[in-house]
Amino acid sequence: MTDGEHIAQEDLALYAMRGSSEEESAMVRLHVKECAQCRAELEKLAADLAVVAMSVEQHPLPEGARQRFIEKIAAAPAAQRPTGQATVIPIRNEKPVRRSGAWVPWALAAVLALIAITLGVQVNSLRRELREDTHELADLTYGNIRAQKVLDVLNAPESQHVLLTASKAAPVPSARAIYLASRGGLIFQASNMGPLPENKAYELWVIPANGKAPIPAGLFWPDAAGNASLVMPELPVGVEAKAFGVTIESAEGSATPTLPIILAGATPTL
Amino acid sequence: MAGSASAGDAQLLDRVCARDQQAMTEVFDKYSRMVYSVALRVLQDQGHAEDVMQEVLFKVWREPQTFLEGRGSLGAWLAVMSRNRAIDALRRRKPTDAVEDVVLVAKTNLASKYEHNSMIEKVREVLKGLPLEQQKSMKLAYFEGLSHSEIAARTGDPLGTVKTRIRAALISLREALET
Image 1 (cartoon, rainbow over the protein chains, first blue to last red):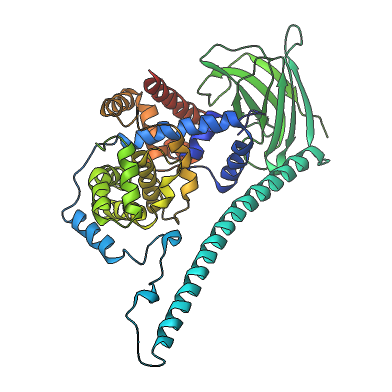
Image 2: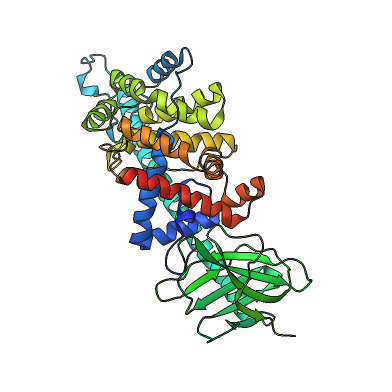
């Protein structure tokens, strides 16, 4: 989802469209809190997408819709008054009551109204706090889960550490993959990767040990320094790998690798 | 098309806060068609789309104060709310977006630019002019609320292809909006 520093635009767009999973959403929320660049991009994307919504073809309202709305708001004006503007009926404006003890019910009603308003304010405040806490908890929980997954892949004795080097010529580009088949976990870091034409992308492949077709493990574009990474791309669980490879594909990615293989590395034999 | 959200909207919302039903009716007259049309685009059902429209606009009446600070464009906010509520209805999930989740939209000043009719027309043209695969991916993502993986499963295209198509569509859209 991230390229190491920032969240990919398409993932930000997915978040803005509310198509991300809860975990991904929590991760994005956490990241944009701290990253002004991604926050700005998310704002732009959200604005762009708002215009997409606003550009839909306009249709007339169903018959009677306006009247139904007017009746709806007329039926619930006072009950929905914003909390901060709630008022109490001023009992001092009532006509003076001469009968002894007749003020007691009014006073009780006023006290009860005050209590109700106070409780209403408190309930709203608690709801707001609960919602904020829930978001924060989700962020922390997801952060912990993800950190644990990364640690699992890094520390598991059965994780395979593979060094990928250039198949020909000077071994300038290189990459390292850490793969845990039982979890479908993969951490990949490449360096000294050459720049790509605009319509091209590097694609990482998992070569299954069972001889089946290579599995695409994600597209990546190196930064200006030639570095790139893929962290926990979506992969099927339980596929033992024979090797890993990197090819150059079209920017849309490919279902099968295109020769030549830029980087390749076999998994160590156990 | 809804007019530009401007000082006029702020004044309307002030009056709505003061429980002025006439002001709320003016908000309804200004934006209800757009809100309804967005919901109808997603749900393809007039009855359900009206339900969403009524809910979104009633929220303005019920909680106008939530729009007042830093929300910017009421029209854009309503469009996004309508789209999100319709997607919730389509996917039969509980409404999840708090007002805060939509605030991002309004930090960009849509009022002066994006809500202009010519801009909307421009966006329509850009969307129509996208390659069919990009149109389809955007439709599935934005108007059906599918994730990239769900789109890939639905279309049979590789996940990377789906992401690239959506990214290309968004780049085309951004370029059109910034020119």
